[in-house]
Image (cartoon, rainbow, N blue to C red):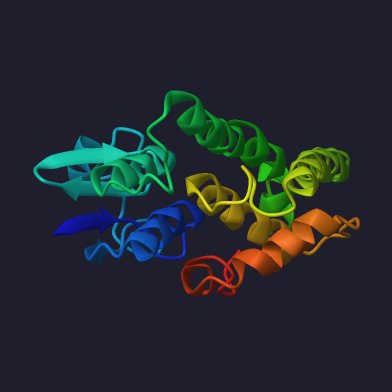
Length: 207
């Protein structure tokens, strides 16, 4: 059985849990991370030298990086609706997955740590203002894309890109900041909320 190592409240672990729920993959979840088993031990660092969750073990192999894990699971279970096989169609999905990981995630880090985690090392008001502005800028980019599709991020069909972005949209919605009106993002949030797996692992009260 697939084993997932990671704290169930982690946004990146929840990507994997949501993917499993969409596909119908049974799994064993072990709680690792802050407040659970430590990830700086020799054992865990042997699985992922970055000391980060999630990590999966499947068929004798170990994988880390949440978006990579989601791609692997969709490919293994031949869910071409979630991750197409045609190179250009797959690249269109992966483009938004990579944008989520490299651009959108980086834009919210300071603001999230200051406003949600209440980190004392993220208390600079100038840096916070800049962080909120960057986060808002990227959410406006997403809003424009969703306005163009009037459905999911890559078009009419739900894909892996919506899993990783859906978690980020919930984080935006849950953050205690002044939100500009982004009608396409709001419509997308409600569209995703029609999926039981999103209510379990995305819009579930956790930021």
